[in-house]
Length: 100
Image (cartoon, rainbow, N blue to C red; front, top):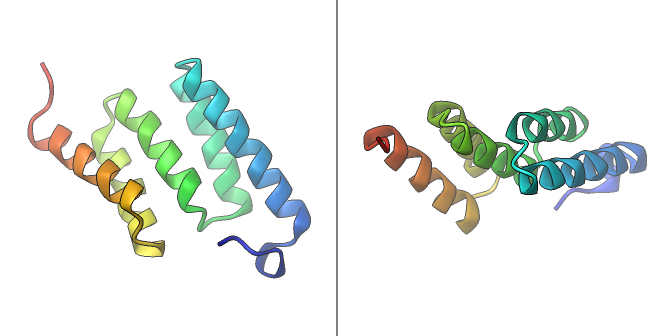
């Protein structure tokens, strides 16, 4: 859980706004813009698992599977959550068996 004690209210607010922008761009299939937003969120809160997983999904959509796997691996290092595990499996499957 992200804490105000650890990051401060302003950083958490900026992080949340950037993640919302990232999700909106993802939904519009503007994956490059979404990556920029999730990266901005991570500048404010570097250990935000949701931002890492969100950015990983974008990289996967752009077929940048190594970058996607790196983000999910980092998320799993921070907090081994089921969603990140599934994303990780998808990334590594895409690397091993890329769609034609």
